Every structure is written in C-alpha cells, then in structure tokens.
Image (cartoon, rainbow, N blue to C red):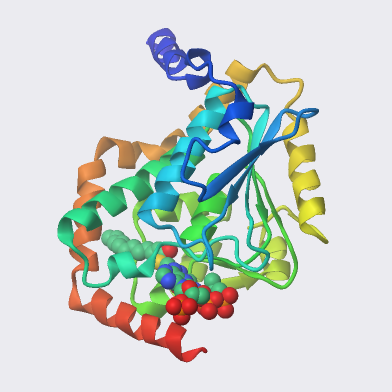
Length: 286
Ligand SMILES: CCCCCCCCC/C=C/C(=O)SCCNC(=O)CCNC(=O)[C@H](O)C(C)(C)COP(=O)(O)OP(=O)(O)OC[C@H]1O[C@@H](n2cnc3c(N)ncnc32)[C@H](O)[C@@H]1OP(=O)(O)O
C-alpha cells in the first residue's frame, strides 16, 4: 500500500520528465509578466512578478507564474525564489476587477487558475522561498505562505485582510496561512482582517527573517535553499509533499465544490457591496 503510493508519488515528480534548458526559459517562453533568472553558480532560479503597477494576480499573470514554476521545476533547478520587480509591492493579491460584477464563465476560469497556482507553488518539488520586497496583502500573502521560507524588507505589510471588506477566504487559503502560523493566531488575524507590519510578521513567525535590501533578501533565501544540500532531492520532495498532504487533500478531492462555493459567495450582494466600497476606497486614496 505504502509502496504503491510512493511509486505513484515518484511518477509525479516532474523534473525527471523534462529536458528543456533553463537558459532558454529566461529568454521569454511566456508573455513577459514574469522573468526567470538562474544563478549559474548556485543553480537557484529567481522568479519575478513583473506586472505594473502592483502585480495584481490577473489571469495572465497567474498563467505565466504557473508556466514559470513548472519550467523551473522541470529543469532541475536547485531552488526557486519568488519575488517582485516592483520595489514597493510584492503582490496586491487577486485582481479585484475580475471579482466585481463578473462574467460567470470567466470567474470560474479565474478561480480555477488561482487554485492551480496555489497548488503549483505549495507542492513545488524543489525548495522554495519568497523574497518579499513590498506589500503582500491577501492572495499576495497566501502565495508567500505557499513557499517554504519568507524573507521580508522593512516597512511593508503582509496578511489576509479579507473580512475588512466582507470577503471570506477558502478553506485551503486558511490552511496555507495555518501551515505557517499557529491556528489561534490565524483565527484572530483572519477575523480581525489584520495586516502585519514587517516587525509584527517576524514576531509571530509569519516571516522567517528581515533583510535590509532586496539583494540581501535574495541572498538569505538562497542560504535557506542551501540548507537542503545534504538531502536527496527525491526523498526531500516526497517528504515535503507528505508534510503538506493535509493542506491539499480537501481541495484535490473536491475542486469543483470549492469553485462552486467561491463563485456563489462572490455573487452575493454582501460580497459585491463590500468589493464596490473597497474599490471606491482605493480610488479615493489618490
Ligand atoms: C467560501 C469562500 C468564498 C471565497 C470567495 C472570495 C475569496 C476572495 C479572496 C480574496 C483574495 C484577494 O487577494 S482580493 C485582493 C485584495 N487586495 C487588496 O485589497 C489590495 C488592494 N491594494 C492595496 O492595498 C494597495 O494598492 C497596495 C497593494 C498597498 C499598493 O498601494 P500603492 O499606493 O502602491 O498603489 P495604489 O495606488 O493603491 O494602486 C495602484 C493601482 O492598482 C489598483 N489596484 C491595487 N490593488 C488592486 C487589486 N487587488 N486589484 C485590482 N486593482 C488594484 C489601484 O486601484 C490603482 O489603480 P488606478 O487608480 O487605476 O491607478
């Protein structure tokens, strides 16, 4: 039984099946919303989100991110560092415009690709780290929690503030948060709609380290990835996936159910009114 499940898992380890060289990837297999830079010496790939002004997770950015994660994984890179080419915002989370008075078919595609993105990052076979060089609210925070390690620059915020504008989060988003923070802190933070400052995030353990600059953050992430040097890569991947199994099981068992629940909630007047007020608030800030 255990042997069968291990063999099944081994078959799912993608790098064995892939052959394209990393160098060609960084020259634009995608539409330029993400870039991949591979350090020749360390073999670590830095994946940057590059969608001005604030790296909102649009359909296109999410597609590019998934392609890039798969390509990095397939090319036997030693690790993946997720960061932003914007020096103030890591990611502003989901594209709110996609959620406001949505076209129903497009909304289904949007939510499905968001599920795909989280699964790709959360179950990525190689070591992952986030160099959080700007604000990381909502789904920006969830992407960071899907990584194994987080280094953040000072004077930014991170957290899931959904309840502030009458949003709920899916259970798997909560589990992603809870894979990093204790349940009682997640419960309080989600209910408060709390955004943690860099210092607060360090104190509760939402991030692992603070860095003085992006360069330092990338070096700290690379040092973390280096800590796995003595581990056999396949054994490491299987162990990581076993540790994360309970975070993904429910979603994998019933992705359609999660999609239905989310689409239904997004269509409620409560959600749409909260979102409308939030969008107004963002405009008025100017
Ligand atoms: C059952 C379960 C059911 C569950 C069903 C539902 C589940 C929902 C879960 C939700 C998950 C999410 O991620 S929802 C997304 C939540 N994200 C947010 O609320 C972040 C909002 N943004 C911000 O707070 C700020 O923009 C921040 C990131 C700090 C950067 O501030 P700045 O001053 O640098 O930039 P701004 O001037 O605010 O923004 C620049 C422009 O980008 C726009 N913009 C900013 N964030 C945006 C966003 N997320 N989507 C679209 N557009 C955005 C602004 O309106 C501006 O547009 P112009 O005026 O045109 O220039």
